[in-house]
Length: 302
Image 1 (tube, rainbow, N blue to C red):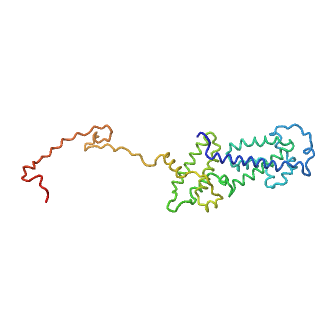
Image 2: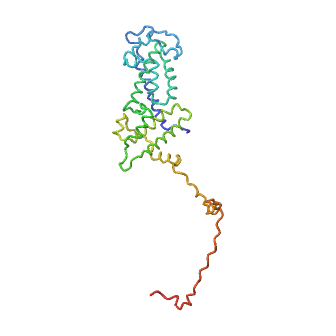
Image 3: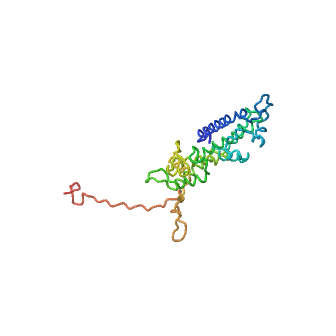
């Protein structure tokens, strides 16, 4: 599918939020060298030339232990290992994995603004702030709550949850399954060049179906909330029915008939070019002369 991807505006908005959160995390940690207990070399002048951010942003445990900005954060986050912190960031990121991959070099590049001895502290502080923000977005009641659930769980909810429709116009199970098939075909087209993004888009559209069409009381039970900008479900179902092969058995031509001798009768074979059976001429009806009947043919019925 060429052009912009459906839902691209929301992805860009999330990316803008992530950039703002990253900037906010940087500002929250920027003054650590001026606080009591900061190392004199960090606050002094004449810092050495900046090495590559990728080699200076990891830091040692001792460096991170002397990071005042981490001392202000919850130990449940600060005590995470680097690998676990990255794993949770990947799991909670409310945008496609391909965008997350491009975000990591951008974060490392932003560390060039800090002195080499401060970069490990700044990176970990930014990552923790980002993780908390992501988990708030995808958690129960968050704006992107459906990214906190698996696509399989969202599909199960969609097939069973009460929908916000008049009682005399319920959605059948076949309609719900057709909507899932429409989502799957849409995701396949969108992610043909980036299959690693398929789970993200499947969550996006299945969550959108729930957020738009589930009863609000039932939606709250699964941690969701109503959204606007919904897919035209009736139009999607019509399109799915047009593209899905019919389940009705194919119509076959009538089977050839055989006479009493068991020989195939070519005149009743059902073939489009079969010869036409000759018919005997109909006898011409005998015409009676009304003038010879003794009655006036123009006499009206009394």
